[in-house]
Image 1 (cartoon, one colour):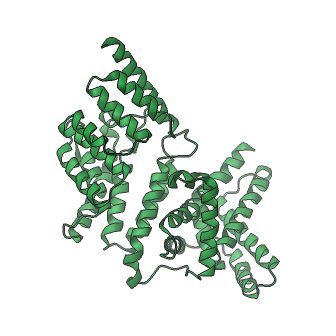
Image 2 (cartoon, rainbow, N blue to C red):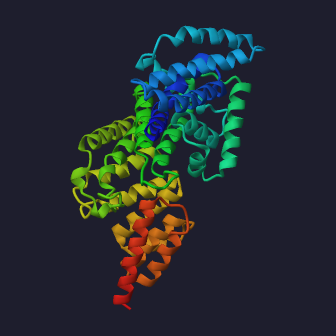
Image 3 (spheres, rainbow, N blue to C red):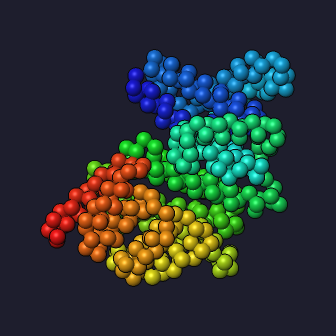
Length: 413
């Protein structure tokens, strides 16, 4: 029975956005479509342990979700327009899965609906992570650094606003596209970031979530091949994802950059990411924006044959630019590391003092203190870093480093 339940969860996690996007196009109602997909999921949980997993799980869920939508619409007799949509669903129920190109278009419509300017930026991210990736309110709350209750309320208000404001379910016209792109790209980047911070914390990465973000970046780039921002976002994700195989050891433990086996990096993804970045930079006429700078930093790491061969001076220059146009805690910590590598740990510590402390801040500080031989302080900093949220692999790595620094403190009083 466990395997059947796992199959339901896996199918919904991977295919849920596609099913939902197509259903929203058909019924024109985000809430109704979500309810239908949820009821189809519950039906699968009840049926599959008895009948076995169907040969085409996605097709089973799609057809069942359509039928559940019809049931919901028929229960709402006071809405004759929705009843007509229900009859349309009956006709579609026997047609199987829509072609891939139709599903792609549906997903793009859903992306741009979630990123409508009438919605606030955090709401766009929350709604997209919920509808496009199927993340729970708890997972979304972790990404947005909010509470689960507040996130659930935000999602409810977003659905109500879409319905009340009659926000269209479509890809915007050329005149609207440029204004909507930053929100769309921000959502995709946030989705990829969510894959690097699984809420359950058992793994360092949610591989499927990261893959879904890359796929969505591909879709938007295909839609807008001459726009600089989608190309830069896709380049950033490809260059980052290319190094993932070497970031974990055999038992799922974190492997820091200086110890990674670069032979395991995906050379094809790196070449494509660099090509996309170069094309994006050519089109922007030298006026780099945040995603381009982040991709350029990732490209510098990807091009280096070894850790010692990394051009840290160039990476520091890029971080200086990034912090000047798009300051963030993550960019600030990256700049600290680059400064320490380019000019020594004291330079990194000086920059670190200007940033707000958080668990990663303490972890970075510990490494820089250790490089100065200040092992007792490094142990304290790592202990402080363990006081906040972290994945289990990351927590184990910090604990191991703390043990190493304790030993060094004993040997070098």
